[in-house]
Image 1 (cartoon, rainbow, N blue to C red):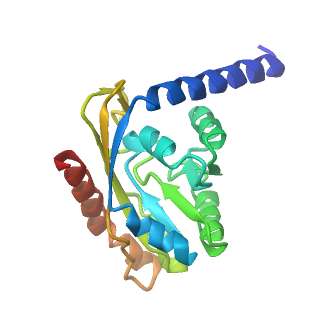
Image 2 (cartoon, one colour; image 1 turned 135 degrees about the horizontal axis):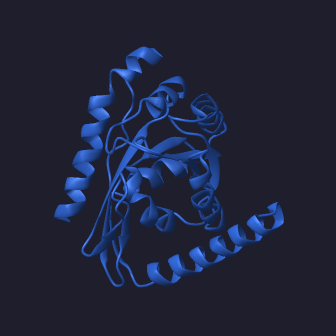
Image 3 (cartoon, helix red, strand yellow; image 1 turned 135 degrees about the vertical axis):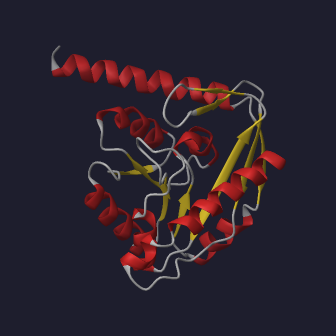
Length: 215
């Protein structure tokens, strides 16, 4: 297969995928809790990190469409479609992950935060293990002094892919609850210390999901 043909098929897939997402998301009924947490930081020009599990990415790309959030997307080939859809929804992307391009991704996160941007990270992506917090986002937050806002999502009805992360696609007319945690600082003074805070931030995301499921 020639490169132009691959590009044509990829572009068509991205256009169709974005259109289908828009049609589906237009039926979702959102309930948003604690959004004032990030809106207050945004109003102050304070950079921060959104952190959420990889399986909950799809509805959050829609919720924050057009906000120019920098989303960390896998450098693997299978991340290309997600990256391009995210860009069509008004996000920017940082390529890399804990398993490939980790140093590049960490540098990209730090640079974006230092420029005043907002960054979204799936700390268990791109290939798991599911709901295990890789420390890269904590190291970046520690270096810059940026807070982390955890996000939990639940849906009243959803398809879940047979993937490592049980990727969630809310069904038509589903009620989708999105809960933001308080802005939480990494208290360590070194990268190694930041890595030791992983359990605390895993609990932060677990609590956010539990709150979304109760909402």
